[in-house]
Length: 383
Image (cartoon, rainbow, N blue to C red; front, side, top):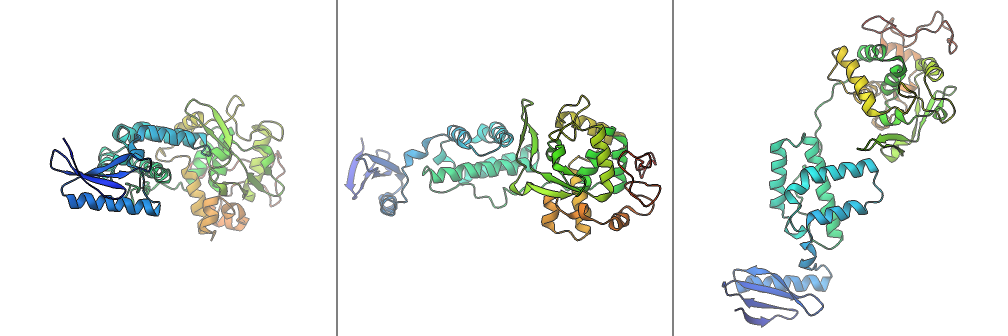
């Protein structure tokens, strides 16, 4: 049987049958709440004084509040995030389901200590967890959820305290060379040739290209206006919404040497009407990443370029744009850069005898003109 030792203002300290000392504080509604058990009476009294000071300052958090499990709290947290994109919601749900909740989901929020987090993180790293990028994403998500728990007054501090654990350290990706870009553009189906060239020389993302419509392209001014991006959910649903970031809404210059090619593409392959998609599948429907990935993979594999991803073309464009003196901001946003290069600068990059568009004379070939010829591949020599 426990023995009450003494009252301490807004709480009490008592000795337990085990010989340890328990500190309890007043919750504000007359109920005494345990602050834990301690080896000495002095330690218990100190915990009580600290709780009383927190109550006076308005910093005290009821220990019972943190008893909700991470599984339940994370589910409520994700459901309440009304502003995140659907694809992001699916990503968060996958990270929770596969990597975070199996280890930590059954723990009460208040029971997740820095030591528990370090152990979980170490297991993630040792097991690979689908790559270091996934580990960093999981850590950032857990830290964000627990930061919200602090705001909800469930815990007093965030146990995610591992320096640098949330930083993604992606392996260095290859940068496609100009000859490789030409080889891919020449080998891929004709309807996708301009997809490859624009991805490279305007640094547009796949989702931006898949959502691009005729009304967003002005061949007279040589500009593309990016206002939307397409993505696909796990169930295959195609979603068109805002670009990846707020800076993604931008105007991109089309390299002058691509304008004739782009005009021909619009005539031959794009859907009709102002809202017609510029890039479509073989049956004329929206271009889907899953289908395009198969086409891309078979094309680059056939050229012994299997290490290249489609997104690597964007890196090529940014690298070339940076070489022209474009700012890092312009390169990351895909503005200016390659698109604003003069023809002479293009020639300097592509080298002698390798124009993007071959012409019989110096006058621009009219769209659809017989003088217009598909540029040859720098590797195979085929048009």
